Each structure stands twice: as C-alpha cells, then as structure tokens.
Image (tube, rainbow, N blue to C red; front, side, top):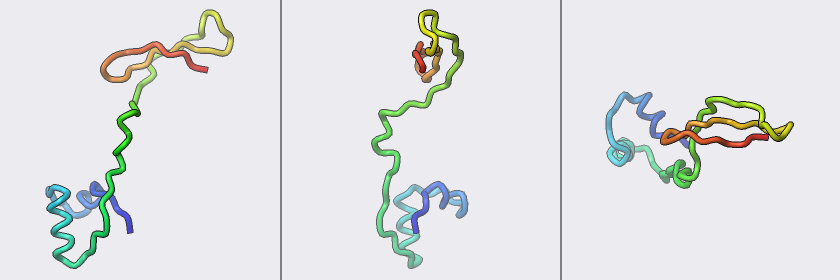
Length: 79
C-alpha cells in the first residue's frame, strides 16, 4: 500500500522527521519497502496567478495576460 508522509502525520498526530518515523514503523513490525520523493523533477514548474486578461490589439484569437509568478509579474500571450 502506498501512503504519503503527510497523510501519516495527519492521522498519527506526530512531529517526527521522515527518517525517525520510518524507524518507528519498522520497530512496530510494519515493513517499509521503499520511499519515493514525488516532487523530484518538479523544479521546472511554477504556480502562477493570472491577474488580468485583455484582447490582443493585433490578433482576433489571442489574449494578453498579466501573470504573477511570485517573484515578478509577466505579460504572456494566450491562445
């Protein structure tokens, strides 16, 4: 069965680091076969918020969007 570390923390009411929790689970007889970090490789992705969209002045099907990516705001053309 696959479960997340955050799910375990929510249901067990503990404040242990991942390594200590794995030791505790093993000590009570639960086998931990592997641990995966699912956020590895996600550095290329950014979460952004579209602040404003307006029709592109020179194209019928395009929009100009003001987008906040956290560090700065960008203007992006959207189909």
